[in-house]
Amino acid sequence: MNYKLPYKGQWLQFSDKDMREWSRSQRDDVEDMLAEYHQNPLAHFLPHGVPWHEKELILADGAIKLPPSQYPKDWGNDGVAFMNDRTNMFDMLLAPRKTGKTYHGAAWVCSRTLKCDPNWPIFQYHKVQYHEFQGPTKAVLASSGTQNLDDLWSVYQEVMPRAELGPWAKDWGAFEVSGEARRTCLSGMAGRRSSPHRLPGRSSSFSRMPSSSMYGRVSGLRYYTPTNRSN
Image (cartoon, rainbow, N blue to C red; front, side, top):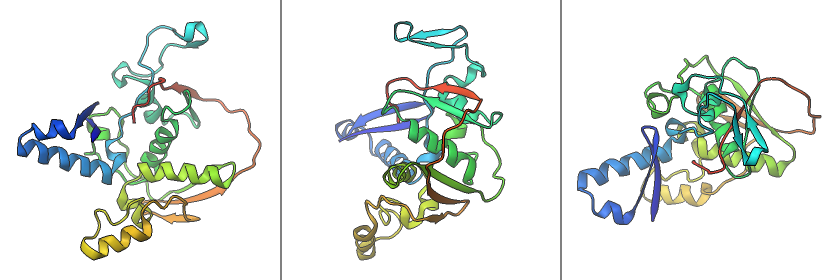
């Protein structure tokens, strides 16, 4: 089996075969990191995007022209800038299909609504700025149609810490209980995709709302992610 793990600003890729060649202590360390990553993906989120550029960046044989970056060079890419932008009321992340936009957007929402720890790798190594928790927030997930909402919620389940999701974690019971109780929990909750009308999280609450509202014009900054998916 192959694995992919964000670690100190980069992706580590390895296999079971690689791990068999490591020392016992190395294997234990990596297995601990994998368990932590599975239990709290948000804490390890590694933003990706078009690299910082001083001049206009031209892509796709001139079909796409991106203005010079308007954020500190140290942030590295548009994905980090998207996560750190707390000046504009609206931000837009643009990219081709299947490049991780929804996952990135879920991390953006969760990092602003859930109680985070400044010692998480996302803040220590991945350039995302930590902000103090301002108290419980009511977040609304809105999309056109119930199926779209189910798909959207499924991504939020992949991003949010298990401590926030509780029994709505996709494989609830894998870490929380053991023995026979664990098997019972898994058979009843594993793979559950649809969301409750309201999720009473530990930090904030999430509600779902099908929307048929008309689209309107807004202003803000646009950020871009490359065509290769990194999460």
